[in-house]
Amino acid sequence: MNDNNKKALDLIQDSHYILIVTHINPDADTISCALALSNYFYKNKIKHKVFNKMTNLPRNLDFLDKFDKITDQIPKFYDLVVCVDCANLDRVGVNFDENIKIINIDHHMSNNNFGTINIIKADRSSAAEVVYEFFEYNKLNISKEIAQCLYVGIYDDSLRFSTPRCDESTFDVANKLVKLGVNPSEIADNLTRRDSLAKYRLLPKILESLELHFEGKVATIFVKPQWLKETGASYLECEEAVNMVLNIKIVDIAIFFRNSQEKTRVSLRSKNNVDVSNIAKYFNGGGHKMAAGCTCDTDDIFEAKNMILKFLENKIKEEEKYEKK
Ligand SMILES: [Mn+2]
Image 1 (tube, rainbow, N blue to C red):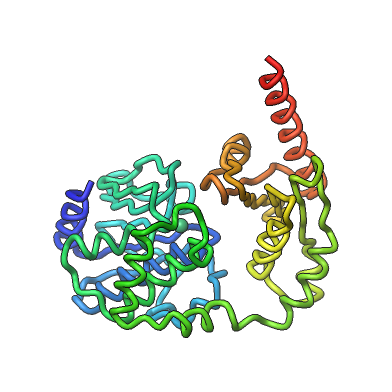
Image 2 (cartoon, helix red, strand yellow):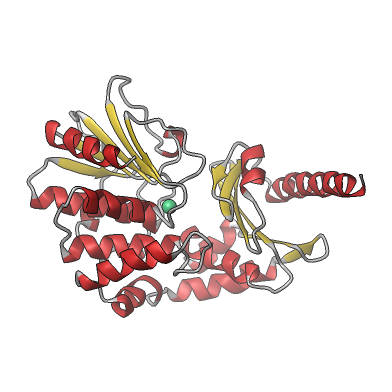
């Protein structure tokens, strides 16, 4: 596996123009991995672009160096693609020439090894941790700016160092990044303490939609497009609501519904070791055991909610049958 780190670097050095690709509905992990590589490429005069299909980038990442250089335009020529934090090519949202070489760096269990070179480590807290290991293995210089990017990816994807995959080695990497100049409190201020007022006008509406199901084990919430309009908040600012309701003691699964391009996007979060990736998978989605997502083929949020709840009901019935046997 580590050999792939070397092979990836060889491929980077042999190419003329690199397209770094982040996933659709970008999060801090995918953006910070891309910007860590981008900062290294700039320093070393390696021609490249960081691409994201949409322009709705998480604005709270704007303090990361080279954030403003991310583009939604595909360059005319590139001879290497580096995908970061993308479990499959659907997450990229672009069709590449079939002969193009791809380096695939990720930490999703469900990653289908679509790359020419695959660096997939499913037990890592974040793709940023995997990118850190790429730098370390190849003894590449990690500037303060690169360290900041990698720390942000780890911090955010580990839900501020609180997920089960956040372990000794995660803290080991975080420690090294702090030694390289990262200021954890400054990062926390930049990342989590620059909320808009709109968000706090929106959150009560979302929380008002809270319903509990299956003796309180499952919590559902949703956002209506109209609420976003009324408050001026973006759907990215809803994210916290799902974590908030998951924090209710009796809740094991929190589910968030929102409209997206005439369909309903479903975000699933869990705790107490409950697996939600199987729910996502059933609806052709993906993700991790405790954070996953899928799309329901209806623009009616209530219909989507019924689809998911029906699936859960059947699953629970099956489990009960199994227990009785
Ligand atoms: Mn990730």
